[in-house]
Length: 417
Image 1 (tube, rainbow, N blue to C red):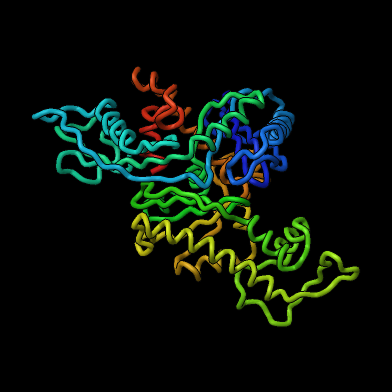
Image 2 (cartoon, one colour):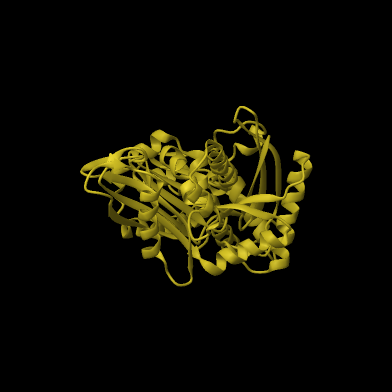
């Protein structure tokens, strides 16, 4: 048996999820720990001791439920500094066709990484999204094929160095080792998307408390990865300001009475609240509440649309539409709001593909943590099949993808892209 522990450090909560891989290769969730997030704001560490205590609390709960001692975690990374780019390059191999091996692809990735380097940023992943072998386009996995020239487009994702290093410090100060790092939006997508959706073209949107992560898949591969520094907590703060209530009451109002579309709410629908400084409850319009929510959601989606336009994403080519997940995806009317805003089909994404504790983890708020375990599981399965010596050596190279890019190539070709 092999244990995999995912750690998702969010703005509102920290989740530690323990998975166990059985002798058949199936993944069982055996432990969950969840604590209120303190000392963390939209991926940034604002106070080290509070952040460490939050992680320790989640780890302790997960250990107690799983009945095991945890030492290593797979960490999800996101934040306002997360961004991506696609780099294209060509390598001439020989005058006559030869068998394509890891070294040829490594050269392409190395070049993409070198061109993507930026002061103040660290590259977290560099994944080939498509290949051209001589004149043959649409090659998914060139390893073992014959060719004299190979081209690749590599999707590179990077994040601010200080954000990353401080997140790592929180984990290390909690007594945990970091066994791998994955981009949070890719993890969420891994948990909720189907292969068919990736092939048809889809946007996975993870609406968290402080961040809205997103990833676009086109023709089965990652096209754009990004993050918007706004989320459900912004909606809660808007409600608190509008209704003159504290954040706890505003969150409860949002969950129990909030709706993401104004024009489906009846004019006469009202709710009771107790504003600050008032001795008695007063009634407010439910339609006005929906307006507050919709205005903020429109702002978030406007930011998303700007980023998609910046990367040249054509929404008309995304035939699978949108899959929205994360805790804020459960807000009433979210599906309908997104369908109307983008004029695309929308579904709410629930984590898939794990066994055990299904009633708990099959919730949009656990998409990132489930996805982290699934990605680590796929890398573990690949590692057991063996890899080149050079790929083994690169596992310690943090400038490339997480636990070593080459160790992931086949798994990413077949499962992520």
